[in-house]
Image (cartoon, rainbow, N blue to C red; front, side, top):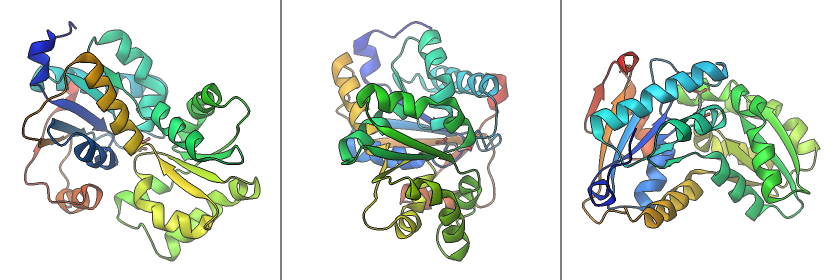
Length: 275
Ligand code: DGL
């Protein structure tokens, strides 16, 4: 697909997507960093979780979503606010679409490298993200001597989607998952899944004060800002948000509010399979 001329692109929204609600943690950071931009969010709630699916499926989903965002909303840039999709599909998306497509892995790696003192970094994420090896690769590009300890945490996404972000169940699962990383001497824990920032309190209780917890949301928002600047397509208008999902559950608005920190007035359900 062709890149719209820059002057036209300026007034267009930015598309952001995730498998579900986790990407709203990135929306929140983008709204803080770029308050004048129009944002369009798509949560693939009908097909969540992504973390347990294979690379071909994830690529297929990602392409459908970007096609939808371009066709329906004429977005000028896309933020893949999902680590699993960033890990498997970013390269293909950049090959197929000519608008800027940003992922969360590079920014996350950057944030972790900035924070670590001893160079031992723990990364947690979905099975897909961890087995892709994308994080150690990105971290080693920035800090070749880093020791990266990774662990998939498949129970975290359903916990977060269910709102069970603190209490004894969340803590005991977190303790089990973090044990080998803490034993390995990490001083930084990188949350390699956009759902996990909601578990920050629980994770920091389990990891202790000496371990710094970082996520990619703020760094992704900053890198988007730089990218729009570079392309001359930053907008100075009235910020707005539009929300789409592929399945609208009864509790969607209540859950979405927890991720975004504010009420979502309107959500539209679309049939993503047709794109
Ligand atoms: N939130 C997504 C991520 O950052 C994936 C969660 C899932 O669908 O498994 O990887």
